[in-house]
Amino acid sequence: MTALLEVKNLKTKFINKYSQVTVVDGIDFHIAPGEILGIVGESGCGKSVTSLSIMRLLASNAKISGEINFNGINLLSLNEREMRKVRGNDIAMIFQEPMTSLNPLHSIGKQIMEPLRKHLKISKRDAKEKAIKLLKDVGIPRAEKIFHEYPYQLSGGMRQRVMIAMAMACKPKLIIADEPTTALDVTIQAQILELMNQLQKTNGTAVMLITHDLGVVAEVCHRVVVMYAGQVVEEADVHSLFSDPKHPYTQGLMKSIPSMTEDKERLEAIPGHVPSLSQMPKGCRFAPRCPMAMEICFRKVPSLDNVSENHRSRCWLYAKENVE
Image 1 (spheres, rainbow, N blue to C red):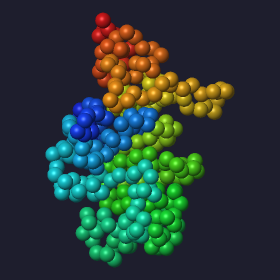
Image 2: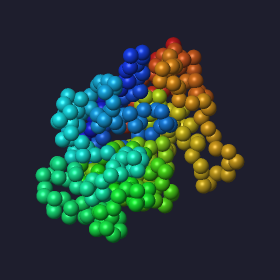
Image 3: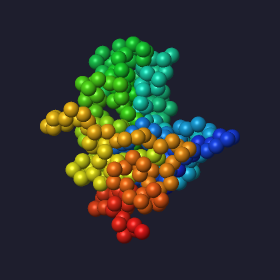
Image 4: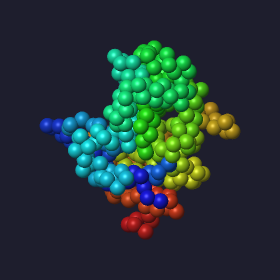
């Protein structure tokens, strides 16, 4: 199947007068039409910067290179005017914190109507009818009343539903959801995930779901990309990743998940922390924290190789023929 989104050797650097740091360093992945791809990793691994690079919503001091091919077009080759036609219409984004993403000065209805009128070129009346229907579709009660209310009048879960309604307004081919369930209680979290699942099945929309919650990944994703320190360290379908994680970092993440069947006083934690962007280790970036690190891990960067069908890992444990 032809990929809807194909990211090749994506690098994102932030440059100022005194220094430059590489936040995303040569990552590759793809998303098929109608697929839900999970992007996981600790805070500071480059997940959100990857999403903002795809949308080209970074500050002017960011330099993006590589390829971001969407429907056969490299988004990095588009000018800002052309990119605005893509955002909200073909690719939509659900941001991490709806309270700061929604405009507090405009009503909910006005904010949903804006992309409808801009991209679909429909009348104000038709846009209002469609906006109210979208609010109903995402499970918001009293949609006609909510249409006239402002973000501060809604709960966190309701605001997140509004963000999803805005994202779905023009029936995009791809939705990028950056931590859509962060700061929501477990019940609302489950409702939001179920809603995203339903919309994906109903409309055939592909979803790139960014999260650090492996429980969320297991619930809704088809495939998973694990990021660490700006690189992809493992990629597999969700069943393979959970049943047989290959990379020591992924294994560490799995061990930190609470279990209903095991009686443990303390959860296992990965020692140390994600390296500083300006002081990356010389070889494998996870080596200083890895319980299985070998001498070569501190000298040479491992490549992202196939360890089985449709399963890739960036680790010297699976490239023994390269060990000197």
